[in-house]
Image 1 (cartoon, one colour):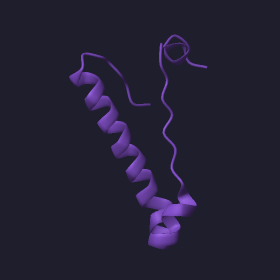
Image 2: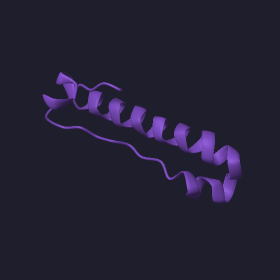
Image 3: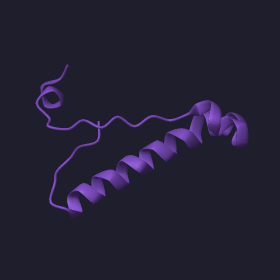
Amino acid sequence: MRDFISEAPVVMILCANMHRSATIYHERGKKLFCIQDAACAGQNILLTAHAIGLGGCFR
């Protein structure tokens, strides 16, 4: 495990439900939209952390 992860006080893991996205958006939902949704959620988490004076990184 990388040092920055093992030394972090908090680690957040974002997951996407590919099959759920596929039920509405079919293959495009499975291979693209669910990944974009998780990435947007991660960005919003980092922006919120920054707004309250915390740091973070997206890996």
